[in-house]
Length: 565
Image 1 (cartoon, one colour):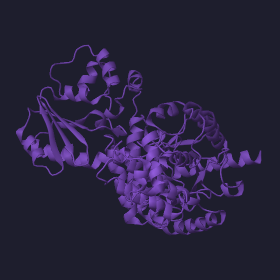
Image 2 (cartoon, one colour; image 1 turned 180 degrees about the horizontal axis):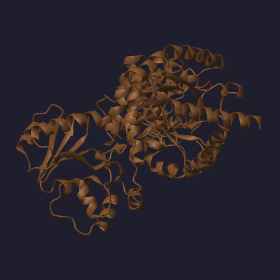
Image 3 (cartoon, one colour; image 1 turned 30 degrees about the vertical axis):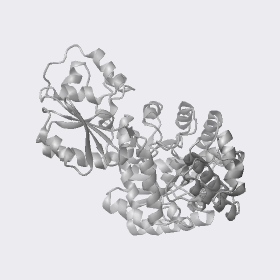
Image 4 (cartoon, helix red, strand yellow; image 1 turned 180 degrees about the vertical axis):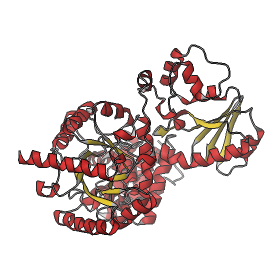
């Protein structure tokens, strides 16, 4: 066995010992030995116990551990510590700049148990509030996690969007043609992409090759026939394909749709003209109306197209307000007034729903009953100052393990609306997770079900849930389902939007903003909604101020009737 694997195991042992509160001199002894073993000029596996013990930097106690690793590949002490530590916490320790002391704060004080949750906490500015952390540390951790994700070769749509936009702009200028477009998963605005595909309606252009070769952020990897393969400094693969101008729109269709979409489309096409002037012509040849790129996944678009029922997809301009947002009252970075003024003056919308964390979310400075009433007093004052703009009194109430919400009825009845969400105890059977959600949905004070599966893309799978049962329960109880716009969540998944719509369930595109900058995530929520075939009429926050006020009033009447009964 080489020295480096032994060194790594000893280093991990010292970290876990420190994490579990072992005396510092023991952990330092093992850590120092681990460092030294990695640099020794001989293979420690070839040495006897006595020979190892005689090496000054190793000593008798560490020598026994080294021999145990050599003979078994591990250590009983290490295995015992690993059994006591969540695997995600062990993975967190691999992030540059995070020693055991900081990991302990992340784990025990913030309740974070995997890299996905840590990344989400960085995006919410939650880390900078913890002991021993600051804005720079938080940003360094966020960048380290992004680098780790990039090494997997998969990327969140949101993380490559800015780079992609600049790339296309540069290529369009160099190529000198308007026949240029993204294709593939990025054009379909998939939540996760493996790279960027671009089609140019021209022969292979040497100007494009030269532009890539001279770029500071792109490296030409391969040139083969009519395809250029490049890679960005952050690891994003870029595939640039060329075709004739005459074939451009046909190729645009064929290079955009998923395999399932294209298979179904080809079965419907009788004859496509050799030259077409638009994608619409291709779909007409299949006897279909035009299908927007976002919908070309082969999931539900053909059944809607056959019935001439393709929706007018929602767009950003349809939104009249934003719900589910956090302020400095809990774990937000912007004050309530800053959030409200930004919505009114910059976004030009009519209302803000504030939903700071509830009292169970101690890690996020959740609001006690007394602080709820204090916040409501500030909201009343701001509404008088900012009228006709309106701040609605909401809360993101934790769904407890038994499915109940974490305030008594006397407090729940004070809110205009309530977003009910799960933030703890994710390890559940499907039956338990489903019943937990349904009980919360059946609570007459629940208005919106927040991020229903708890997933964090590329880092944490959602808890197992019978989604149709949950949607059916929302339909039966008039509860809205959130499309959480945070690009790490995009939860509820777009593949379930149509089922919700068919059941008459309203959806709400919620940014879950923790600062004024967080409102930008609404754009990603709109993208997810469009992929799910959502129209403005299906979206709660596309209602204007008068309409949503009436909606909340009707829900309050439902609460009062149910509570009286």
